[in-house]
Amino acid sequence: MIIKTAELVAVGVKKAQYPEDNMAEVAFCGRSNVGKSSLINFLLNRKKLARTSSTPGKTRTVNFYQINDEFRIVDLPGYGYAKVSKSLSENWGDMIENYLKDRQGLRKAFLLVDIRHEPTEKDVIMYQWLRHYGMDGFIIATKADKISKNEAAKSIALIRKTLKLGLDDRVLPISTLKKTGFEELMAAIDEVVGKPLEI
Ligand code: GTP
Ligand code: MG
Figure 1 (cartoon, rainbow, N blue to C red):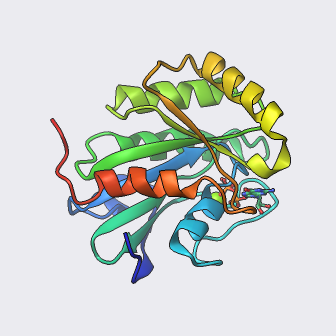
Figure 2 (cartoon, rainbow, N blue to C red; figure 1 turned 45 degrees about the vertical axis):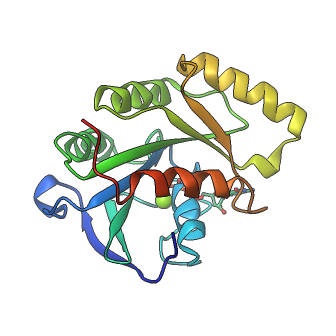
Figure 3 (cartoon, rainbow, N blue to C red; figure 1 turned 90 degrees about the horizontal axis):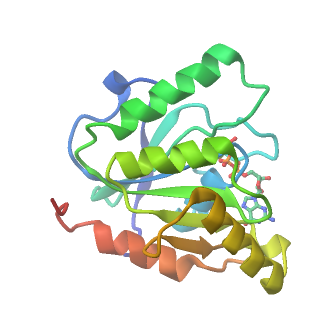
């Protein structure tokens, strides 16, 4: 996949604001501050297209980035950040669920978890939600530069155990800082974009 153009085409908090066509989409979800927006910028080779922050709670809307007018990458708002007001965090569930359900173009949703931490209860729920909506389990373990290879193996085992992953589920360590792990991610995206949904 060669990215020629990438542009933010829609920002929404409810279904009516999400694009209506059935263009293929690949979504990224996970806790606040896990690195979703950084990963999208890296994939698109655009440092500031998706706004990032060292303070959690930066992305609070569903953001749709259109690539080559062929498919979209969707940045979902992060969860699990206490300082986001209650109404907003309740709204978060609606936002994500309204996105996931009946989304004809959705081909793949990646769940991001921080490689250094055991997945939280909310991560477990998010994983189960994704499976419920027909996604396969593809977990991205972010910030892999922060730990050694040895520790990474242990962390991945813990991630697998806590999320109760099956043998077919994948956990891919990546680092936007060191630029590692991306070939596999790009290959997974290539695989689903441009190919009709398997029913
Ligand atoms: P919300 O929008 O709040 O949901 O967060 P997000 O998941 O979009 O996180 P974001 O991309 O804004 O990144 C959060 C912080 O993690 C930033 O300070 C990034 O620089 C940092 N970060 C992201 N990826 C990596 C990585 O691979 N390695 C390291 N060391 N830091 C990273
Ligand atoms: Mg973000």
